[in-house]
Length: 261
Image: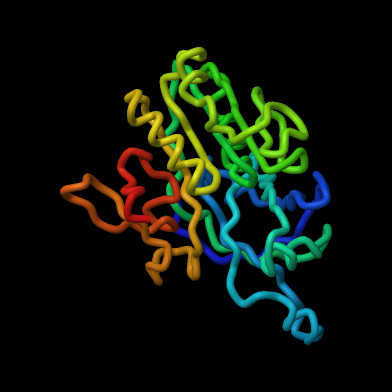
């Protein structure tokens, strides 16, 4: 794994998924060889200084975005429009330029010959898409994905929506224990809102099932300098803080001190 580096890369393609979701594709063979599932980039739209209005409209901070796909250097970032940073990115088109810092953080540990459950909610979907491509040839995979409504849903094996607009009505963890038993799951990989990760960890810990989760956190720097994204890690008797952007974003779910968050 290389240290995060700053780059500027032209957007090769913008792919529309829905009103709120889109993918920005870039090309860089060196970055493609360096990245792994679960890692992310700090990205930001680049505006020309000749266009003062555009510069003022772009947030100063970079936005952490997981690697959605990596095809030998064809790298995709799946993004949902939720705030100023992602709305600025949503205005980009093919030919525009991205500022990137990365690849950042530590990714998912890969496994072989296991029955794997992928568990995601909303924008927690992208890093698991890249992960399943790396696991699928050597494991048996079952994927559960949930969202608020149909607009948050993407290809998977089992769909949950809070409004019942598609799939099963409820939250994706509502019957997690039953699914783990039925599918005879050996290991769980998860990404999504804190509530989802917390609920899933309670189940996997009780059932003694290995579980790795990708944490979401507000990141000012993304490279481990500011410590603003630190979370408590360890045992109830012996714990410390670890940075989501540096030691994470992937952690053993059982090591996170959820009660302290």
